[in-house]
Image 1 (cartoon, rainbow, N blue to C red):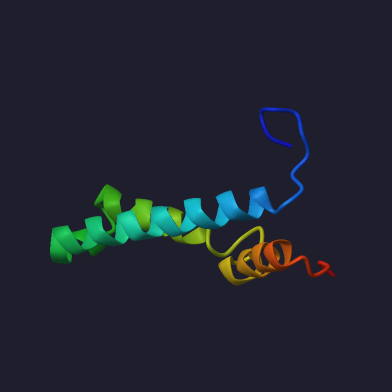
Image 2 (tube, rainbow, N blue to C red):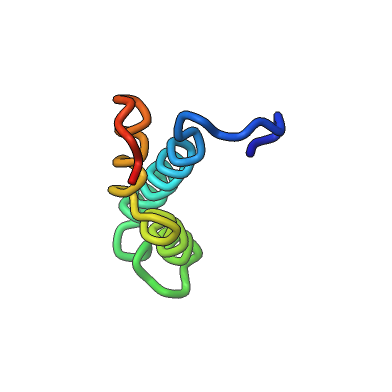
Length: 80
């Protein structure tokens, strides 16, 4: 359920979880690359941010599972 108090019916939760995780990883990877070797230093905050962002593609359903849920919702196939 979102702010509108209506239940998700077309995998909106999976869509938003997938997109948010992918964008967070993309942005932090770019930040690490911009900083070069310093971006991988454990004392630099960007390294921690990248690790934190990467976990969103892993826990509570991997990105692949989220894509499967969205694909099934779009095609109308039942979600098992």
